[in-house]
Image (cartoon, rainbow over all chains, first blue to last red; front, side, top):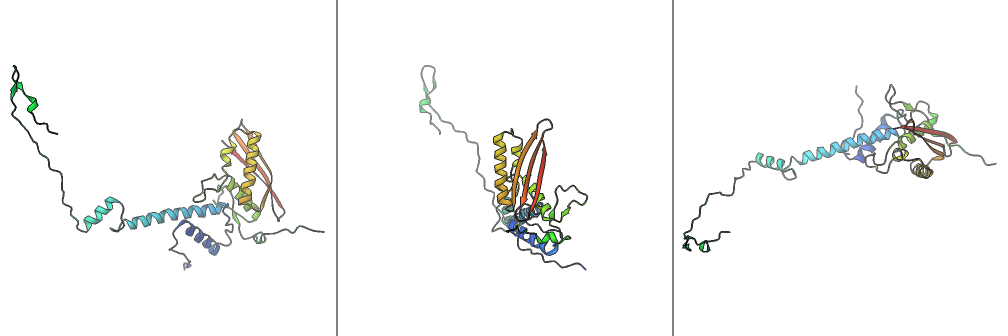
Length: 123
Length: 136
């Protein structure tokens, strides 16, 4: 029958993981490992495992946060959540048209050229 | 007449209790345990000296960065600098260790740099030495 071991599931940052792994090693492997000084190679592995746990916990929290409309930060997720709840945005865009403007001006000079002094300036 | 009392770690008296793990890891069992604090300290020293500053997550001051210093020109000043560094960091991270001799030798023909340290463990009356060869 499998042995029931005391594992804590609520400590989820680097220091918590590290201290829990040390306690676990002390409790269940007292004959296999006893050097818990920060310089020992075994502590290097414990710290590496804690690092992985810390990073995974961060992403787990981050993913959960993105599933709530109130807390999501990623615009893509916010739109997806809003669409899921029935948000249907009206697509409003700027109107476009082609416009041709003409103006009648007097002829001037011996060549009867248009008098552009009378032309309206459109800015 | 005064006599020196030697301190013996209780783990050294229990032959079946492992203390730490040996370096390097390339043995058949991956991890081979050591059963004496003297061996554990030696492996801790190797691990510490071969760790560069900033390598450890959330512990940026851990390590010596000695590997980078060894491949600079080994002058008398550099030797003194390395020795001072070693004595300082050993004081901080290994308070029970007293380095007695620190030597650095380089062999440019074989691209090899050797780092040697002899030390004693305070109150335990144990003397040991450490030799790390780093090949480029």
